[in-house]
Length: 144
Image 1 (tube, rainbow, N blue to C red):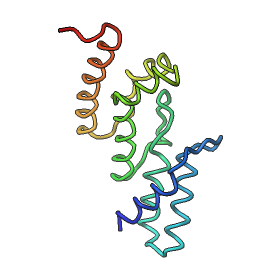
Image 2 (spheres, rainbow, N blue to C red; image 1 turned 180 degrees about the vertical axis):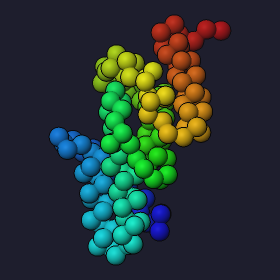
Image 3 (cartoon, helix red, strand yellow; image 1 turned 90 degrees about the horizontal axis):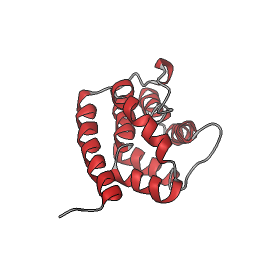
């Protein structure tokens, strides 16, 4: 069942969604509609909906109303936040988006104020070390 949900979501999200409503809400609504068509259990549908709708959020605004209540939601949101410090995101920010300062200003708040699970905080710490090495090499070049 989860493979099917994952497949549905991946297929729906193959393009980038840009909207005032935000990609999380649009994606969650799309998945809910598809799962209802396929007559999945309502409780399961709502758990999936919550996991997606609350996964992103503003990195600078921590609001109890936008935090997931279920374990599934916490896992998906935390995964999104841990990806925030992935080297790939920063390579993109430096090369394309030029949003380096915006991302850098957010990095310090996310770990303690946005991550729900201790294991996510441990992953965050590992990713931050990788990020520091990457940024050091970008600024100073690799040293022998």
